[in-house]
Length: 380
Image 1: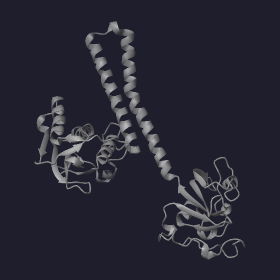
Image 2 (image 1 turned 120 degrees about the vertical axis):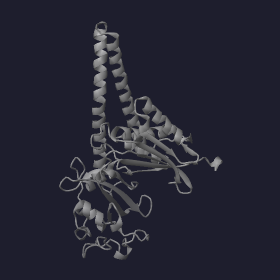
Image 3 (image 1 turned 60 degrees about the vertical axis):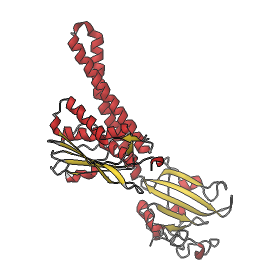
Image 4 (image 1 turned 135 degrees about the vertical axis):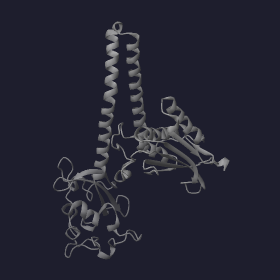
C-alpha cells in the first residue's frame, strides 16, 4: 500500500496534527483507495510533509512511496520548470499570497528531465487562512504526445495531398496563360478538365479537414430530416452505372417495412458514398447493399435502420479490423488520405448510431451501420 496515514517515524514536526486527523486510505469517505486513481496523487500536510503518495505517483516519478512519505514535499517531489527554476521555491504555496487556491496544470520536469503535467490545489480551513493541505496531481505526458503526433501526421498528410493537385493546377494555368495561342481547342479542354478535377480534389480534402475538426471537438451538427434510405442508396448506384459500372455489379435488397428514419441526408449521403466507393474500388464481384429494420442502438427506442455494404474482394485482414476506423488507416493498395472511414464513424456516432466492420459471406469486406429512427417528439 502506497498511501500514508502518518509520516515516517520522527519526521513529524511538533506543530503538525496527529496522525488520526490525516487522510485515511479512503477519499472523503467515498470508499476510493488513492491507489485506484488513474493520476498521480501527492498530498502534503500544513508543514509541507508528504502524507499521501499513491501508486500512480510512484509509477510516474519512479519514487517509492515509503521513501516519499514523511519527507518535505520539495525533497520527495523535486520539480523544476522548463527554465530550470525550482518549482516549489518559485510558487511558495505555504508562504505566498493567502488568496491563492492552487496552480493550473502545466509542464514541469522531474529529475532527469522527464516531463510531467502537474496541477495543485491549496486547501484552507477558511478563506485567506493558512494552507492545511497541499494536493498535487501528476499526469504522464504520453497521451498528449500521442495527440501531438496525430496532429503532426494530419498536417503532413494534408500538405502531401494538397501539393499534387495544386502543382497540377498551377502548371496547367501558367502554361495556358503563357502559350494560349499554341494549343488546340481539344488540348485546352483537356487541360481545363484536369484543373477542374484537381480543384474538386482540393475541395474534398478541405471538407474532410473541416469534418475532422468538428468531430474531434464534438461540434458536428446533425440536421435531421426524413430520409428514404433505399432511395438514397439507389441514387448512388445510378451514379456509378452512369459513370460506366455495369448495373449487375450492384445488388440492392430492401426489407419492408422500414421504420421512418430521421437523419441528416447530406451526411448520410457522405457515409454511403464512402462505403460504396470502398467496395467498388477495393472490392471485387458483386457489391451487395442490404437495408433492414433492426433494434435501435439508442436506449429507449425500439427500432432502427441498418445498412450493410459488402463485396466479394479479398476483404480486410483480421489483424487490421480494429484499426479500420482510425485516422490514416489504409489497407493494402489503398490510396487517398486514410481519413474517410474515420469521418464515417464520426458521422454515424453523431447520429447516435454504431458502425462495425467484418468479413462478408463472400469473403470480402462487410461494413454495417445502424441508426436510431430519431423521430421528433411530436411524431412519437
